[in-house]
Amino acid sequence: MITSDIYGKLKDGREVRRFTIANKKGEYVQIIEYGAIIHTLMVLDRNGNLGDVVLGCESGERIEGFSRAGRVIGRCANRIKEGRYTIGEHTYQLKCNEGKNMLHSADDDYGKKLWTGSIEGESVVLRLEDTDTIGYECDTAAKVRYSFDDMSRLTIDYEITALGDTVINPTNHAYFDLSGTGDVRDHDLWIGATYRLRRDEDGIPDGGLISVKGTAADFTYLRCVREAMKYGGDYFTNGEVSYDEFYLLDKQESGKPVADLYSYNVGRGMRTYTDMPALVLYTDPGHKKETSKGGRELGPYCGICLETGFAPNAVNCPEFQSPVFMQGMALKSTTVYEFYTR
Image 1 (cartoon, one colour):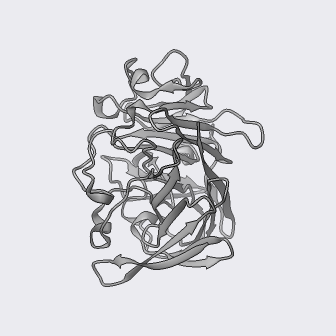
Image 2: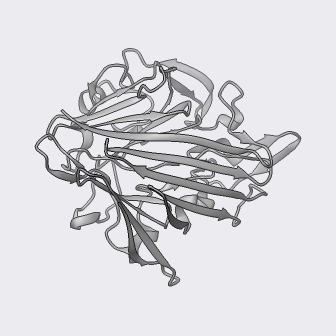
Protein backbone atom coordinates (compact mmCIF):
# COMPACT_ATOMS: atom_id res chain seq x y z
CA MET A 1 0.00 0.00 0.00
CA ILE A 2 1.24 3.49 -0.86
CA THR A 3 0.03 6.73 0.70
CA SER A 4 1.22 10.32 0.52
CA ASP A 5 1.12 13.43 2.68
CA ILE A 6 2.97 16.74 3.11
CA TYR A 7 6.35 16.44 4.80
CA GLY A 8 7.08 20.16 5.03
CA LYS A 9 8.07 23.25 3.10
CA LEU A 10 11.35 24.54 1.72
CA LYS A 11 12.62 28.02 2.55
CA ASP A 12 11.07 29.39 -0.62
CA GLY A 13 7.64 28.04 0.35
CA ARG A 14 7.49 25.04 -1.99
CA GLU A 15 5.81 22.02 -0.45
CA VAL A 16 7.62 18.69 -0.13
CA ARG A 17 5.49 15.57 -0.35
CA ARG A 18 6.23 12.34 1.48
CA PHE A 19 5.32 8.88 0.15
CA THR A 20 4.94 5.81 2.37
CA ILE A 21 5.24 2.29 0.93
CA ALA A 22 4.16 -0.44 3.38
CA ASN A 23 4.46 -4.22 3.02
CA LYS A 24 2.34 -6.99 4.55
CA LYS A 25 4.71 -7.37 7.51
CA GLY A 26 3.98 -3.84 8.69
CA GLU A 27 7.39 -2.64 7.53
CA TYR A 28 7.55 0.56 5.51
CA VAL A 29 9.78 3.05 3.74
CA GLN A 30 9.14 6.78 3.41
CA ILE A 31 10.46 8.78 0.45
CA ILE A 32 10.36 12.57 0.23
CA GLU A 33 10.51 14.67 -2.92
CA TYR A 34 13.38 16.89 -1.81
CA GLY A 35 16.56 15.13 -2.87
CA ALA A 36 14.53 11.98 -3.65
CA ILE A 37 15.48 11.09 -0.08
CA ILE A 38 14.98 7.76 1.69
CA HIS A 39 13.76 9.45 4.85
CA THR A 40 12.52 6.54 6.99
CA LEU A 41 12.99 2.78 6.68
CA MET A 42 11.21 0.71 9.34
CA VAL A 43 12.12 -2.99 9.32
CA LEU A 44 11.85 -5.87 11.80
CA ASP A 45 14.58 -7.22 14.06
CA ARG A 46 14.96 -10.81 15.32
CA ASN A 47 12.42 -10.16 18.11
CA GLY A 48 9.78 -8.79 15.77
CA ASN A 49 10.34 -5.15 16.73
CA LEU A 50 10.23 -2.44 14.10
CA GLY A 51 13.18 -0.07 13.95
CA ASP A 52 14.23 2.80 11.73
CA VAL A 53 17.54 1.88 10.06
CA VAL A 54 18.32 5.16 8.25
CA LEU A 55 19.24 8.61 9.49
CA GLY A 56 17.18 11.59 8.40
CA CYS A 57 16.01 15.08 9.21
CA GLU A 58 12.95 15.32 11.45
CA SER A 59 11.86 18.81 10.43
CA GLY A 60 10.91 19.78 6.90
CA GLU A 61 11.94 23.35 7.64
CA ARG A 62 15.56 22.25 8.21
CA ILE A 63 15.88 19.70 5.42
CA GLU A 64 17.90 21.94 3.08
CA GLY A 65 20.70 22.35 5.62
CA PHE A 66 20.75 18.73 6.77
CA SER A 67 23.46 16.25 5.79
CA ARG A 68 23.32 14.17 2.60
CA ALA A 69 21.60 11.29 4.45
CA GLY A 70 19.36 9.32 2.07
CA ARG A 71 19.70 11.67 -0.88
CA VAL A 72 20.09 10.65 -4.50
CA ILE A 73 23.48 12.06 -5.46
CA GLY A 74 24.02 13.05 -9.07
CA ARG A 75 24.47 13.62 -11.82
CA CYS A 76 27.94 12.51 -10.78
CA ALA A 77 28.49 11.12 -7.30
CA ASN A 78 31.84 11.12 -5.52
CA ARG A 79 34.95 12.74 -6.95
CA ILE A 80 36.32 14.01 -10.24
CA LYS A 81 39.95 15.11 -10.16
CA GLU A 82 40.19 18.89 -10.45
CA GLY A 83 36.54 18.84 -11.58
CA ARG A 84 37.75 18.37 -15.14
CA TYR A 85 37.17 15.78 -17.84
CA THR A 86 37.25 15.52 -21.63
CA ILE A 87 34.73 13.96 -24.03
CA GLY A 88 35.96 13.85 -27.59
CA GLU A 89 37.85 17.06 -28.14
CA HIS A 90 35.91 19.12 -25.61
CA THR A 91 37.04 19.66 -22.00
CA TYR A 92 34.49 20.38 -19.29
CA GLN A 93 35.26 22.26 -16.07
CA LEU A 94 32.98 21.68 -13.07
CA LYS A 95 32.89 23.63 -9.85
CA CYS A 96 35.36 22.26 -7.29
CA ASN A 97 34.10 22.05 -3.72
CA GLU A 98 36.64 19.74 -2.04
CA GLY A 99 39.91 21.58 -2.32
CA LYS A 100 40.89 21.46 -5.97
CA ASN A 101 38.54 18.53 -6.72
CA MET A 102 34.80 18.08 -7.27
CA LEU A 103 32.71 16.06 -4.80
CA HIS A 104 29.10 14.98 -5.40
CA SER A 105 28.49 17.53 -8.19
CA ALA A 106 28.96 20.48 -5.82
CA ASP A 107 26.03 22.93 -6.00
CA ASP A 108 24.48 21.06 -8.93
CA ASP A 109 23.82 17.95 -6.83
CA TYR A 110 20.49 16.17 -7.47
CA GLY A 111 20.25 15.78 -3.70
CA LYS A 112 19.77 19.54 -3.32
CA LYS A 113 16.80 19.74 -5.67
CA LEU A 114 13.06 19.26 -5.42
CA TRP A 115 11.90 16.29 -7.46
CA THR A 116 8.31 15.59 -8.55
CA GLY A 117 6.88 12.38 -7.14
CA SER A 118 3.97 10.19 -8.18
CA ILE A 119 2.49 6.81 -7.33
CA GLU A 120 2.78 4.39 -10.25
CA GLY A 121 1.46 0.91 -9.57
CA GLU A 122 3.35 -0.56 -6.60
CA SER A 123 6.13 2.03 -6.76
CA VAL A 124 6.93 5.66 -6.09
CA VAL A 125 8.52 7.42 -9.07
CA LEU A 126 10.38 10.71 -8.77
CA ARG A 127 11.35 12.84 -11.75
CA LEU A 128 13.75 15.73 -12.16
CA GLU A 129 14.36 17.91 -15.18
CA ASP A 130 17.91 18.97 -14.34
CA THR A 131 18.32 22.35 -16.04
CA ASP A 132 20.34 24.29 -13.44
CA THR A 133 23.70 22.87 -14.47
CA ILE A 134 27.15 24.19 -13.57
CA GLY A 135 29.89 23.26 -16.00
CA TYR A 136 28.20 20.18 -17.49
CA GLU A 137 26.93 22.31 -20.42
CA CYS A 138 23.85 20.13 -20.93
CA ASP A 139 20.75 18.99 -19.08
CA THR A 140 19.58 15.55 -17.98
CA ALA A 141 16.17 13.99 -17.46
CA ALA A 142 16.29 11.86 -14.31
CA LYS A 143 13.84 9.28 -13.01
CA VAL A 144 14.20 7.21 -9.85
CA ARG A 145 11.74 4.44 -8.96
CA TYR A 146 11.46 3.14 -5.38
CA SER A 147 9.75 -0.18 -4.60
CA PHE A 148 9.45 -2.05 -1.28
CA ASP A 149 8.07 -5.57 -1.26
CA ASP A 150 6.91 -8.27 1.15
CA MET A 151 10.39 -9.82 1.06
CA SER A 152 11.70 -6.63 2.73
CA ARG A 153 13.56 -5.55 -0.41
CA LEU A 154 13.98 -1.85 -1.14
CA THR A 155 14.66 -1.53 -4.88
CA ILE A 156 16.05 1.63 -6.45
CA ASP A 157 15.81 1.86 -10.24
CA TYR A 158 17.69 4.73 -11.87
CA GLU A 159 16.99 5.98 -15.40
CA ILE A 160 18.89 9.13 -16.36
CA THR A 161 18.93 10.38 -19.92
CA ALA A 162 21.72 12.57 -21.26
CA LEU A 163 20.44 15.59 -23.19
CA GLY A 164 23.99 16.26 -24.36
CA ASP A 165 27.34 14.51 -24.01
CA THR A 166 28.03 14.14 -20.30
CA VAL A 167 29.08 12.02 -17.34
CA ILE A 168 26.37 10.24 -15.31
CA ASN A 169 27.03 8.41 -12.06
CA PRO A 170 24.19 8.50 -9.48
CA THR A 171 24.07 6.84 -6.08
CA ASN A 172 22.05 6.94 -2.87
CA HIS A 173 23.75 8.35 0.20
CA ALA A 174 21.70 6.56 2.88
CA TYR A 175 23.34 6.34 6.29
CA PHE A 176 22.42 2.94 7.75
CA ASP A 177 22.35 2.01 11.43
CA LEU A 178 20.82 -1.44 11.78
CA SER A 179 21.01 -1.53 15.58
CA GLY A 180 19.81 1.98 16.43
CA THR A 181 22.67 2.50 18.91
CA GLY A 182 24.15 5.52 17.16
CA ASP A 183 27.51 3.78 16.63
CA VAL A 184 27.90 1.43 13.66
CA ARG A 185 31.39 0.19 14.46
CA ASP A 186 30.00 -2.98 16.05
CA HIS A 187 28.28 -4.00 12.82
CA ASP A 188 29.70 -6.94 10.89
CA LEU A 189 30.40 -6.36 7.20
CA TRP A 190 31.22 -8.42 4.12
CA ILE A 191 32.04 -6.84 0.74
CA GLY A 192 32.57 -8.88 -2.42
CA ALA A 193 35.68 -7.00 -3.50
CA THR A 194 39.25 -8.26 -3.69
CA TYR A 195 40.62 -4.89 -4.75
CA ARG A 196 40.28 -1.28 -3.69
CA LEU A 197 41.09 1.64 -5.97
CA ARG A 198 44.59 3.08 -5.81
CA ARG A 199 44.68 6.81 -5.10
CA ASP A 200 47.03 9.62 -5.97
CA GLU A 201 48.48 12.17 -3.53
CA ASP A 202 45.12 13.97 -3.42
CA GLY A 203 43.17 10.82 -2.59
CA ILE A 204 41.68 10.53 -6.09
CA PRO A 205 41.60 7.16 -7.93
CA ASP A 206 44.23 7.06 -10.67
CA GLY A 207 43.20 3.88 -12.49
CA GLY A 208 45.24 1.42 -10.45
CA LEU A 209 44.13 -1.30 -8.03
CA ILE A 210 45.47 -2.53 -4.68
CA SER A 211 44.68 -5.86 -3.04
CA VAL A 212 42.71 -5.55 0.20
CA LYS A 213 44.19 -8.77 1.62
CA GLY A 214 45.52 -8.37 5.15
CA THR A 215 44.46 -4.72 5.47
CA ALA A 216 41.77 -2.75 7.26
CA ALA A 217 39.94 -2.59 3.92
CA ASP A 218 39.60 -6.39 3.71
CA PHE A 219 35.95 -7.35 4.10
CA THR A 220 36.15 -10.44 1.90
CA TYR A 221 34.93 -12.28 5.02
CA LEU A 222 32.31 -11.16 7.55
CA ARG A 223 34.27 -8.90 9.85
CA CYS A 224 33.50 -6.50 12.71
CA VAL A 225 34.05 -2.93 11.53
CA ARG A 226 35.58 -1.86 14.85
CA GLU A 227 38.10 -4.71 14.74
CA ALA A 228 38.99 -4.00 11.11
CA MET A 229 39.75 -0.37 11.94
CA LYS A 230 42.54 -1.45 14.28
CA TYR A 231 44.64 -2.45 11.28
CA GLY A 232 45.02 1.19 10.21
CA GLY A 233 45.89 2.29 6.69
CA ASP A 234 46.51 5.17 4.34
CA TYR A 235 42.90 5.45 3.25
CA PHE A 236 41.28 6.72 6.44
CA THR A 237 39.47 10.06 6.35
CA ASN A 238 41.71 12.99 7.30
CA GLY A 239 43.87 10.70 9.42
CA GLU A 240 40.90 9.63 11.54
CA VAL A 241 39.97 6.00 12.02
CA SER A 242 37.09 5.85 9.58
CA TYR A 243 36.38 4.60 6.08
CA ASP A 244 36.02 6.52 2.85
CA GLU A 245 37.06 3.54 0.76
CA PHE A 246 36.50 2.79 -2.94
CA TYR A 247 36.09 -0.84 -4.06
CA LEU A 248 36.01 -2.45 -7.48
CA LEU A 249 33.45 -5.20 -7.06
CA ASP A 250 34.27 -8.79 -7.97
CA LYS A 251 32.05 -10.35 -10.58
CA GLN A 252 29.17 -12.01 -8.74
CA GLU A 253 26.85 -14.75 -9.88
CA SER A 254 23.46 -13.47 -11.00
CA GLY A 255 21.23 -12.80 -8.01
CA LYS A 256 24.11 -12.79 -5.52
CA PRO A 257 24.75 -9.84 -3.17
CA VAL A 258 27.83 -7.63 -3.35
CA ALA A 259 27.75 -6.70 0.35
CA ASP A 260 26.21 -7.89 3.62
CA LEU A 261 25.85 -5.73 6.74
CA TYR A 262 24.73 -7.31 10.02
CA SER A 263 24.02 -6.20 13.59
CA TYR A 264 24.31 -9.06 16.06
CA ASN A 265 22.83 -6.84 18.79
CA VAL A 266 19.36 -6.89 17.24
CA GLY A 267 19.71 -9.68 14.67
CA ARG A 268 18.99 -7.41 11.74
CA GLY A 269 20.89 -7.65 8.47
CA MET A 270 21.00 -5.98 5.04
CA ARG A 271 22.27 -7.44 1.78
CA THR A 272 23.16 -5.14 -1.10
CA TYR A 273 22.68 -6.09 -4.77
CA THR A 274 23.69 -3.97 -7.76
CA ASP A 275 24.54 -4.08 -11.45
CA MET A 276 27.10 -1.28 -11.02
CA PRO A 277 30.86 -2.00 -10.94
CA ALA A 278 31.98 -0.21 -7.78
CA LEU A 279 31.02 0.45 -4.18
CA VAL A 280 32.01 3.17 -1.71
CA LEU A 281 32.20 2.32 1.99
CA TYR A 282 31.85 5.42 4.16
CA THR A 283 31.72 5.96 7.89
CA ASP A 284 31.87 9.43 9.43
CA PRO A 285 34.30 9.99 12.33
CA GLY A 286 33.21 13.57 12.93
CA HIS A 287 29.61 13.99 11.82
CA LYS A 288 28.52 17.59 12.24
CA LYS A 289 26.22 18.30 15.16
CA GLU A 290 22.63 17.94 14.02
CA THR A 291 19.44 16.32 15.21
CA SER A 292 17.95 13.30 13.46
CA LYS A 293 14.44 11.90 13.78
CA GLY A 294 13.08 11.42 17.28
CA GLY A 295 15.38 14.10 18.68
CA ARG A 296 18.45 11.88 18.34
CA GLU A 297 21.71 13.82 18.37
CA LEU A 298 24.05 12.53 15.68
CA GLY A 299 27.71 12.00 16.44
CA PRO A 300 30.82 10.13 15.25
CA TYR A 301 30.18 6.82 13.47
CA CYS A 302 26.42 7.39 13.50
CA GLY A 303 25.90 5.65 10.15
CA ILE A 304 27.50 3.54 7.47
CA CYS A 305 27.08 4.13 3.73
CA LEU A 306 27.27 1.49 0.99
CA GLU A 307 27.11 3.59 -2.18
CA THR A 308 26.90 1.76 -5.49
CA GLY A 309 27.97 3.29 -8.80
CA PHE A 310 30.81 3.71 -11.25
CA ALA A 311 34.30 4.07 -9.80
CA PRO A 312 35.05 7.59 -8.55
CA ASN A 313 36.94 9.62 -11.18
CA ALA A 314 36.23 6.87 -13.72
CA VAL A 315 35.69 9.56 -16.36
CA ASN A 316 39.46 10.21 -16.19
CA CYS A 317 40.52 6.57 -15.80
CA PRO A 318 40.16 4.50 -19.00
CA GLU A 319 40.97 1.38 -16.95
CA PHE A 320 37.51 1.58 -15.35
CA GLN A 321 34.03 1.20 -16.85
CA SER A 322 33.13 4.55 -18.38
CA PRO A 323 30.38 6.79 -16.95
CA VAL A 324 30.21 8.84 -20.17
CA PHE A 325 26.85 8.97 -21.95
CA MET A 326 26.41 10.66 -25.29
CA GLN A 327 23.37 12.75 -26.18
CA GLY A 328 20.18 10.67 -26.12
CA MET A 329 21.75 7.74 -24.25
CA ALA A 330 20.39 6.72 -20.84
CA LEU A 331 21.90 5.12 -17.79
CA LYS A 332 19.63 2.39 -16.44
CA SER A 333 20.71 0.63 -13.26
CA THR A 334 19.28 -1.07 -10.19
CA THR A 335 20.40 -1.33 -6.59
CA VAL A 336 18.55 -3.41 -4.00
CA TYR A 337 18.83 -3.33 -0.21
CA GLU A 338 17.34 -6.54 1.18
CA PHE A 339 16.65 -6.80 4.92
CA TYR A 340 16.63 -10.03 6.91
CA THR A 341 16.73 -11.28 10.50
CA ARG A 342 18.88 -13.92 12.12
